[in-house]
Image 1 (cartoon, rainbow, N blue to C red):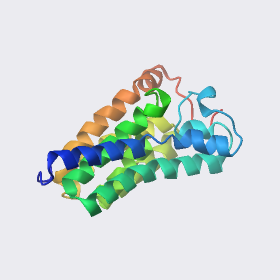
Image 2 (cartoon, one colour):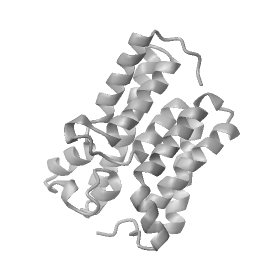
Image 3 (cartoon, helix red, strand yellow):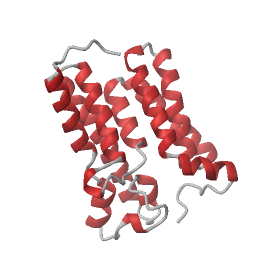
Length: 201
């Protein structure tokens, strides 16, 4: 954990702004702008990039992935630049929470993987890059997005130790547990062997 340098009111402000940034539902924004309809009414009903891909529009899925990751990174970078490292972690955490439970969608959001990877890249880029590489390697082998997400999230705590970034270990561990929670239905399908492959409509 970083040293607690920020006064509580300012820390709460950074957390609130991180939440509001994280709660922007880019999956819905992108699909509606491109005339693809409401992504919540197709596939899994999720607002993340994997479900956007089920529209058949790869550009929309890529845009959603980058924007969802970017909002986590931006929340961290703004809080770090204007306040301090503990505020950066608070903003990143709440950006993740905002994505999963956005106030604009009655707290029914995405599963947080892209936002998690984005905030990791901003907090400690070697850890973030390694986690992204883990996602890509697992996806290339298994072709299952949820499994890739779970493996990448779980690996993040290991990468924290390998790259000597212990100050973000507890945040990474907490968010890993959160990712497993948001993927509980996927885990059940993985066990049953019914989880769809990447790109399946």
